[in-house]
Length: 197
Length: 197
Image (tube, rainbow over all chains, first blue to last red; front, side):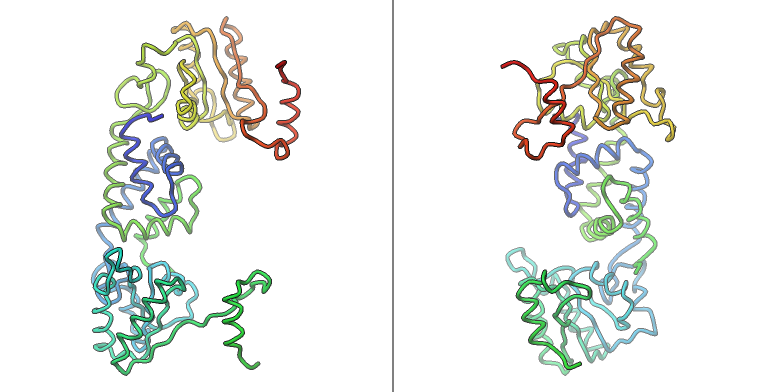
């Protein structure tokens, strides 16, 4: 089956990408070797990104230089800090544009079995930041997985000693969703948290 | 929404991969920047593959050096030549292991509107090969798209002048398939081409 071990190595490297299995990786590898301009473009943009982008020293967003554009923006409030699991979550909030505070990117969730503790998620830096920047509210915007919930709980405890207010995202029916297709958990949460019109 | 134009460039380069849209490309880009070892591995394997692999001078399979392992294999018959659209099709035949002849990889199908003519598919080389290697049978193993059929028809005509036998893959019900889910076209072809038990 194998055309060459060199091709196999490339395929294996491509399976590292999220959601890319052996078959897609092979397809990507063949595509890249048959479209050399695209492959060269990928190498050059990826090399440049690896060289130029690094975590923001304050919020762990990716940026060129020391501080990211959000942390540098004087019009964004330092009082509210939104803690997210991943960079993609930060991007999702920014697409909306409704949030005008700052962020902190954990880069994952607590998972002691995989060796991911508070240190790996930068939680000591987060606590220090809350103190030095006079943060008054921390939004714990973790996902609703059990690890996400556990991480939010841990942060809630860790911040408990300070005067900072801890909030979380509202649970409920997403906009435009059909009730019929909602899971029971979401429905009962939405019922509980119902509001007067 | 955009974290950095450098990240956007990387995402754009990743959308070139088959089946990767803007969202997946962004996800891949963030993954690579957060998993630098995997990114470095991708750059090094891809650079090596681009440097070392090139089309086989006989059959246009990818290989290191002048001739691919299939063309070099003295146990494989030169008499039968299987013409495929893409490298992935060659891989599919090789996975099975039933075919012991040689190949010719077109690298696409005829598509005059996109500027893909016989030259681009190496058809002159293919005709020369049939002559010099004393090929007695050419299997036209194109896909069943209309472009694939047109390419097979063109090759059939082009080879018509020589004594070479032209064959095509059997059409019928795939192994293990449920008749109920077969399309009418496949069913009627399978009926037409029925064989005595």
